[in-house]
Structures are given as C-alpha cells and as structure tokens.
Length: 64
Image (cartoon, rainbow, N blue to C red; front, top):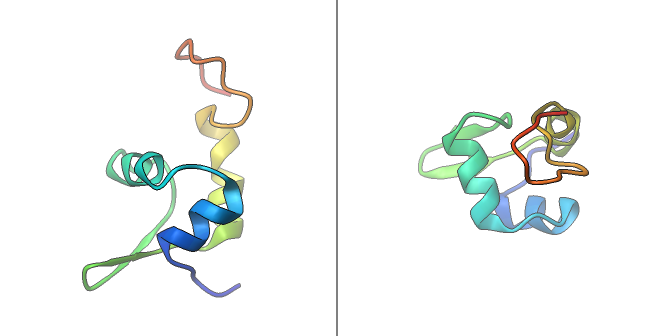
C-alpha cells in the first residue's frame, strides 16, 4: 500500500483533518513524517482506530 497525505486520509476514513492532526499529536495513529509533510498508510491507520475507540465512540472516554 502506498502512503497518502492527510487530505486523502481524511476523505477515505471520513474523519476531519483536525481530528487526524490531534491523533498524530497524541501518537494514536501510525504516520511517517517526510520533511514537513505527514504521510499515512491507510490500512495501518484503519487497523489502529478500533484500539483507540474512534469507531463507534460514545464520547465517554472509554476505549475500544
């Protein structure tokens, strides 16, 4: 799988860019920093999301 930028990742997983930047800051999703750009393997990101309660989140702080 090739790496994609944050705009493409946001479109593919239907999560706002601001949320993705926050997840990167918190180191909750895998990413590669190339210079000043962030790149993502979408398959790895999708696999990592359920661990952090992003899918089906109730907003009560519980993690999946």
